[in-house]
Length: 352
Image (tube, rainbow, N blue to C red; front, top):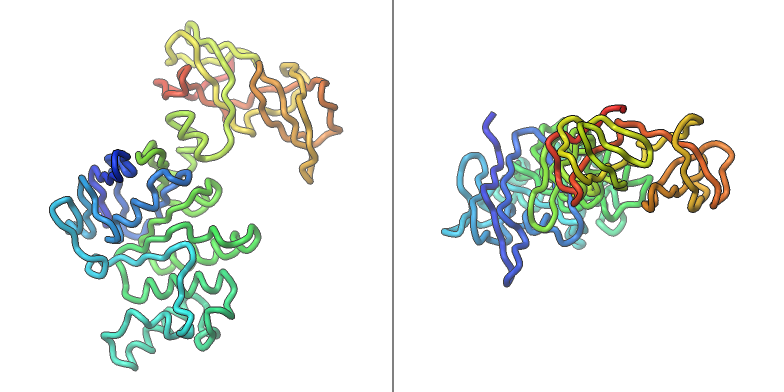
């Protein structure tokens, strides 16, 4: 399938800093892709480049096979066929919902514009709000209006910059789920920027991990979570501690026991552990408890794994700090990296 959006070795510099550094990615029709990275990694700058609000220093942007930006020249934002929604939604306060959604449809007759606006209002389940003013809407309602407005001109690609960051936890999940249902029903092609790993894994068909202006890894969310290429990439998707290990003869020795990792070179390594990698076990390795805190349905312990603090969810009677517990390693949450956190030939260990 031909990509709808292509970024080819895209770079953008501010002074001596490469904010976007040789980024290449593809987005196919009907897919929802997500750029995940910390603040300052270049993801919002990348979105601005695609939207036409900035111009690349190197590389090329193609939409529908047409080059829309390169160092030689660029199409203006209105000629690119993209829709952009910023974090704050930015509705026009002096226009009601119907007028906000229809703002970009000035070229249509009044009847056609009204028909198209109400089609979108129906699709996003906000038709009863047609005459409401932006200040009277909830955060989730404002967001739906902003996205309906962005889709009114039938863009090839919809760009969303931190679309759920202004919503609280419970509302965020409900709005996110409803909005994704709407976008998938419409068959929209969407590129979302976020710094929230849980959000990224929940919404993305295709996930791009970004750090220091570069794409570290791309693929399906579960694949990236299970097989990160480096400690940096792993930690973009959630908590991971790294305990020291020593690889020798296809095995890795750790404080929690030996692992089989036949493709790992001999020498010092790090074994990355997701929180779910540690499980209570009466016949497991005995480790010290550094701290505990109440966590609703149990306690969260902090364990000492050879000088490395590591979390453990504990649902039994909690031990006191200074005591010990026995744990085993669930290999589904473990990955072997090089001593500096770099990728190795085969990072998934087996039981030893």
